[in-house]
Image 1 (cartoon, one colour):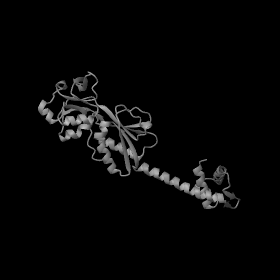
Image 2 (cartoon, rainbow, N blue to C red):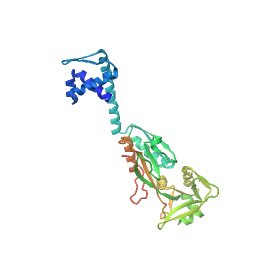
Image 3 (cartoon, rainbow, N blue to C red):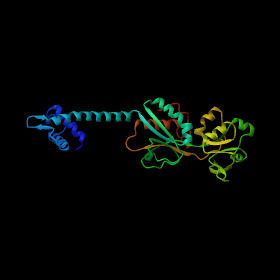
Image 4 (cartoon, helix red, strand yellow):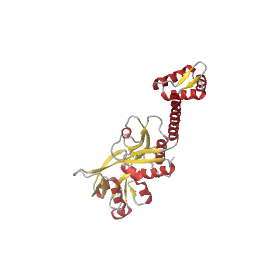
Length: 311
């Protein structure tokens, strides 16, 4: 038998003074009430209630046990109430994982707005570019660019990663703007990654339904997009970055989008969260807010907008 259930039956029997009254209140038979009491007495190795056909008397051990059972049942009810409240209303610590560049430049403003809307939530953000197993590493929400593989994970599509070419007005004033991807080799390009020997860097474009690789070169390589972004804003070259990341710089005019008629193959992005049980309110509000702030466009290309709020 379930110990807490038996404790509840025992407390009810003591409160009402008889097995029959407890049975009526709980909607079970008097025989079942007796089984619960016997179960507890067997566990503690002592008599809790002296029973006769007409009355019951609680023993000294039974009285002490009764008082402790009331405390335990009260704490159990409080624990269930707290869990239920947290499940309905966003509350507690939310652990989020995201790629470094997206997390630092696009996710951070969303998180601060989320915290303003839900003051009972704390968010711990971990930024990593490696593949993360959310279940193994204990993340509530994982934002992943690329595949969504992973057993036990629910997936919500977000705006895809489409890379766009851009440069600062100062650079364009000195060097002019490329008109086609084939013009890029004549420009100073800012390259994401590390320079591996003499391996050329290639940027991929889609033109007339076909993919075309363009070999580019430049003097600045970096494995942190923030370095390239700063260099691009200061007019040191042409950059290729996600339009989700660049949207504020493009909107403010610090960077100008180039080659708008040429697209790069988009990479899907999803918010992942564990499927076990019903997700808590903090997880669902966060994921729903992400889908609102970074919605995928029907044609498959991204249409991210500044998150002015969260749902």
